[in-house]
Image (cartoon, rainbow, N blue to C red; front, side, top):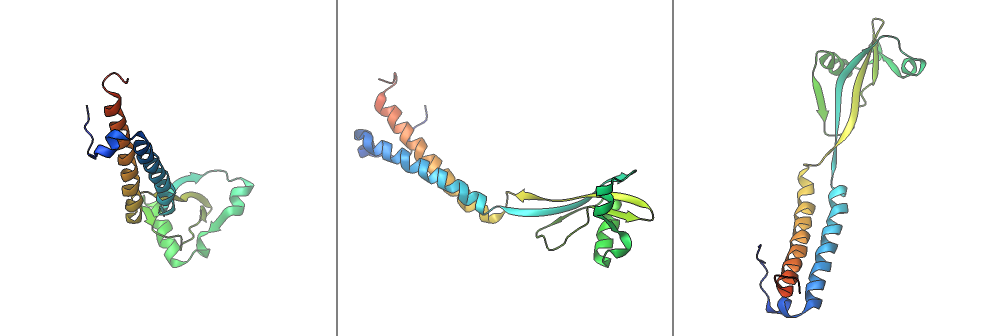
Length: 151
């Protein structure tokens, strides 16, 4: 059986305090979730996906000719065709999804993903763990009050 870390005779005697402790823990835990989502950071990636044999009308419309790319974009496209994958911290670069080069169409995967390990998100995680600990403590005190058979 796990012992409670919060030793208080008031919690042992008053069920209203145990309920308040659990309610406070649930509120802290629930408040940390939007804060965690709010501090989440997006990372952007760019990599080669596949060669398109017969492009559709929509793919042809979305195609960027290789000659119209900036020198920096050409470097990224060439490196991606060689198998490199790029991860960017911001969306300052708009990379093409389809590039036509010498009559061949190349599809690239460029999108964003959530960076859950952003250092700014550790604070809300710690607050959420504190809320979980408060709920855990309230449950442990309630179990101790009810006894081994829950009576």
